[in-house]
Amino acid sequence: MSASRAISVSVNGVRRDAEVPVRLTLADFLRQQLELTGTHLGCEHGVCGACTVLLDGRSVRSCLMLAVQANGRAITTVEGLAPADGGLHPLQEAFREHHGLQCGFCTPGMLTTLVEFLRDNPEPTAEQVRVAISGNLCRCTGYQGIVEAALGAAKRLRA
Amino acid sequence: MKPPRFDYHDPQTVPEVIALLGKLENARLLAGGQSLMPMLNMRLAAPDHIVDLNRVAELAYIREQGDALLIGAMTRQRDVEFDERVRARSPLMHEAVLQVGHRQTRNRGTIGGSLCHLDPSAELVAIAAAMDAIVTVQGPSGARDIPFAQFPAGLMTSALREGELVTSVRFPLWRKGHGYAFIEFSRRHGDFAIVSAAALLEEDGAGKITRASLTLGGIAPAPVRARDAEKTLAGARASAELFREAGEACRKLEAMEDVHVTAAYRRQLAAVLSRRALEKAHERVARN
Image (cartoon, rainbow over all chains, first blue to last red; front, side):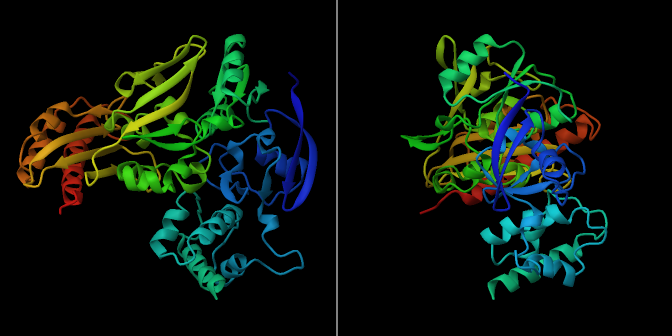
């Protein structure tokens, strides 16, 4: 049983083949090997939500998964949200418009979490948005701007 | 690198898992990883081998089996949350699973992982106690069933023997139209519950309680069935006074104290939450 393994993962639509230590977390794989540093690491034990990515479309904490577990799966990180031809994802536009960020540390996790949430709940209430982001800690905004951005994005995505 | 060194195994069938557990020393099973991964990242756990169950497809399913729901150990909490059969036949479980962590953790966390981790405040552990679940385990000498009341062996320790894994959990269902409620007190939504209460009630047409289950989570190392309160309830006529009396019986339960709250605070929560859960369950009993 070797200490590393070959994996093949689709990241933001691009196939990536890599040799990874078996104890490497998915978060460290994305940040260090693929240099996708948009995925942030806050607590590294599943409390802060900053490292949230989409695994086959479902939000997961990438610090609580091993990179080897992503073998054969599709990952979307914050870098994969904006359209390839430039511009921003409607949720990112809404965050800018509603001051949904200040320092920006929690933003990648907020965005990936809300992408899944708005896909499943296109017409959420403010209360439902608050529950949806209950696993993401922000220390700047008091969440108000984030909730408004999510509601604004929902409206825009429905249009 | 955060986690300590370990060898990694990803078997695809239950017999392969059992064979690995039989030959490896100091191995840990990795289910959804929402508790073990933090323990590895903080190096509170240092197994020599990780046996990952995530590729064992045969362990992920939800089935109706007569008057029970059979749930595979590797079924994600998210899949329990969105399953229509769970919602229709065990609304208590549906209500409880919505309070397990957050969407991101429910997308990975599993029912078997939660039961084996046995956090004192875990919602699904309380539900297993409330519904008298049967845990099926498999090991080198075959399969055996463990009634949930005998499953916790101590603080965060299950009755699993060396070389065994949980393969499924059977939840006997209550009669259609029964009343149910799961209420927890936590500082924020998704936080660990300080105390939780799960109530199930069946009543006859005249408002007499014919069957009652009342469980408190978070007050002791494992969930506690409030047997005295259940005796008070069974056969009695539902009323505010009866539910208050049942709640008061829960105030007499042994309660833990920790850095968050005192034992007396937990007993107060046990009394109040159980009364509220019973009232809510009673309101939800279907009346024709």
